[in-house]
Length: 410
Ligand code: SF4
Ligand code: SF4
Image (cartoon, rainbow, N blue to C red; front, side):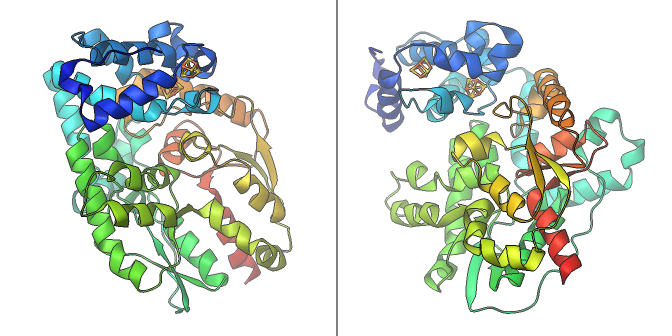
């Protein structure tokens, strides 16, 4: 695609990046067919090709409008279009750049400003979010259905292993996950402990930066990333082998630190190293597959519907690994129809675009339930909470299944 970027953006870092991405797009439209919002709304401008065109117009100097903003807001950033695209168009980066410019050009209404500010200021701050979540859980039965959907029932974390191992890996505790589902990180720590690896949390690390960055506060998001790098760096130098992610939404972001901070002379090299060390749980556990098979005897014996989060299958391009680990443990793993489609959670999307979000959730749950599962498993806190809000079938992180079986076998 030919481009002619406007002077305001032409020679900037983001302008050059966006220009290179736009030039790869041949406008073939293959991506449109796999876009969840195009499937629901049937409008070209609610599909990737249309959004790319809107962003191109803005970068070429056309004033963005509220309509431009709406079509970009409706994008889930699921990156399904990247998986489909034969030309390697990095749509996710382009939409981040485009949204920020549109945000600067189009003022939002007061309710929108309040909602977005509340999300980006409250969610990443554990000291604020955790007590709020606990209070919500105490009065959960009195909350409206809409709020109950966002406040999962209280969960116990279980015991954090105290054994010390020579092999150590860092674990990102995250921002909302410890309050909403504390068992996930504890389960990961127990599984790794059983395999002879100690998972260590750096106390000063927190939100991966995705919340602020994707809400167009790029500076705030980059500050979160720098803070995490500062928190992890001494432990990396002390010999930590990897940085383990239990939420694929965080994993995809930390893997991008190297790219996002490449312009920052003080952090570029460290950020690159941190990204290289970052692994989703499902990338690490195959190294221990035979040990897991020995310990579990391959006999979990449940029928499980696996929902691969977009941040895992499209963002990180990791496919088949969780299924393989679960199958080795004896699980009857089912992939549902249209498993490439987003469940509608998409970070803060379920709050900001509830109508589309719940349509996608209900479609996803219908497909998952059609496989007749005892349980639904996924790999991202947002997907887990969103799906659980629409079904009585238990929805868990897959590592909880492995942990439960290991504890029974212990
Ligand atoms: S993003 Fe890729 S698939 Fe979509 S129109 Fe452009 S080249 Fe085609
Ligand atoms: S990221 Fe997802 S919702 Fe957005 S354009 Fe691509 S496929 Fe559609």
